[in-house]
Length: 478
Image (cartoon, rainbow, N blue to C red):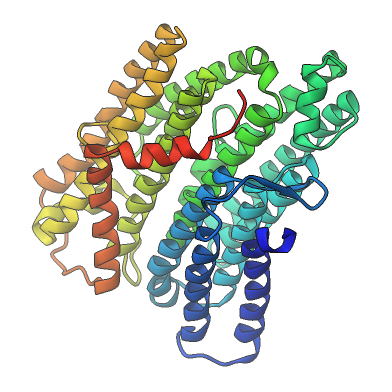
């Protein structure tokens, strides 16, 4: 039973090793076999996890692994996101950069395995192992463009800051272990509830834990790596870094704060309020000053994570469900935005500046419409999913009488509308500098259009996805 419940993780590990061997010893033209095996692996593991979606919560491997609705739902989102990332990266890494090597897919699979371990973690040791397995391949992926100084600099900053954050997280875990004499999340929660934990040491450990979580989520003041990585790394790598790892980081925050430390909610709530306000404020105001669209989306992402934290701050089942809904909505918005930048890039040209979108409506009206959907959704304009996501976390805050925080969040949201509408203005009201045709295949045309249209569909009909987010927390004790 243990191996059956962990079958998706075991399957991904085995296939990642197999694909690495295939890529090493079999010569391929345009990495057809490596790419095909990778995508088939993601389809197969999606089915394996889907088979376990509606099953009872199971804790195995001596309490280090948990399979519940929360685990399975987040894994399914990670698979779907990674599949789309690899689909859009295929031609980009072969034709437009010198990244035409199979390591991109292998590193992506190993990083995804780390995300799966992190999502299914039920002990401090498993959380740390999952986090490192997630992070190390990402450092290598950011630095894959070795002849690009910006990519190398971004990778070094990411690695140094990541090592520092991992150290802080591990130090916090060691303090919590010292205070409770356990690494099992459920046992730690019980020790705190029965007052058998040493509270001063526990409080110090909590501060270090939140610092580590904040770095992985990319919130202020632990955000310094994010704009540099988004700007310096190849767009295909940014597409990966900005989506699936955010889901895993959210899972880590939920496991450590909501599952392990629910009785300390009044202690970690003020810290998250401070981080949320700083992230929403600094993220939105700094995004206004950006001319590089990747850097603008980086600061925009910082602000969005600040809004997601509002759901955790509420400390209720509605709040946690709203935070998960917001996280999934943001991931699919970022997926669509960076997929668009990959489509608009070509050999010798990277779509990085906002001015590169000038006159997009003239060159491709459908692409311009899809980008308009993405920008409106990110801005929180109805009837797109971004509006309902913001509405749900604000409603959760109002339900717990944090009206002042909801008002602050609304003010920052209004500020954020400006730089999203600027992108729309450039696409529709400025003349194009070049009048070339945009070449994009049928598969990418369908996937990007589906992604952008889904932002509208789930904004008009959000109840199904929101019900899934509520189902993920079914049986949790808050």
